Image 1: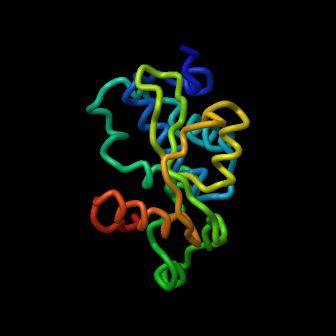
Image 2: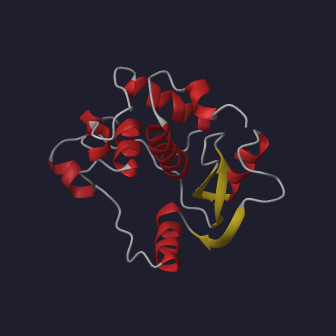
Length: 173
């Protein structure tokens, strides 16, 4: 088995559970925002350089990967959970843009994490699938489970939740 991809790049202590949680945050970051895998990992290292994800009681687990992705990208002090008119009323600066709406194909696929449980299923846009295939995190000949078209990641999540029987997806914030 190859070395865990994240073990090479994460600059704080983690266990297997912590690395899977980090993968979930990375997928949220690269899917919601116009950033690369490297930039996503850099944001996580910058924000969590003083913690350890080695215990399932760690405070980081009290929030979702979606929460952490938004908090890392926009910054906690941005009060990112306030939207539209609420931001204006509070005198808050506009938020950095999310990834633009663009009709795209989204794939449920597996990432080769290099961990004990190697195949980790995720939802990614076609461009992210291509990028992860280039660095060997998704097998070129397999790994795509199913796909559908959507105008953005949130719409893709809604479709994925329905197909998986998980109920209705609701965005945080």
